Length: 200
Image (spheres, rainbow, N blue to C red):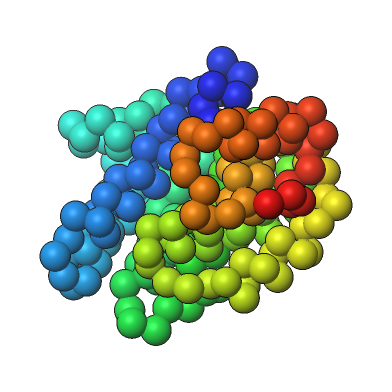
């Protein structure tokens, strides 16, 4: 996805999504929910501290401080992604809280691009719920279907399509393997038309 963004913002986008990936790894690599919760809390607190203190010698935190904060994105704003990951830990998962991860990721990404759009919230939610299901972290089929329906016919503005590419793929069959020709064609179609949902 990164290569679809303008070169000037790729470092900032990479820094943001590296934090998201680190939080996902905290869950995937933890043997107990309590341990995963501790790791996620560490990331949240470390990110919030960036708004007042110098970055520690942790590469992903330093990247946030160096390329995201100068764009007006606060550490606390990035830390908000943690809530969506933490929502996956209890046995009874709150779909609304899980969706917040995608809404915030897409929102920050749009701020990096300097463009805003009302449809990004639902597109981000669709991405987060679909991603959680692909990871085996809950069943949000009802909520996912509702989002696909609400986004039907929605066309993302050209400048936001690097972000909504992720939502376009999230709307497809969750059993579909990564890197297939069909997914590649879906990306090309989205870049040309901006359609977020539609097709398989």
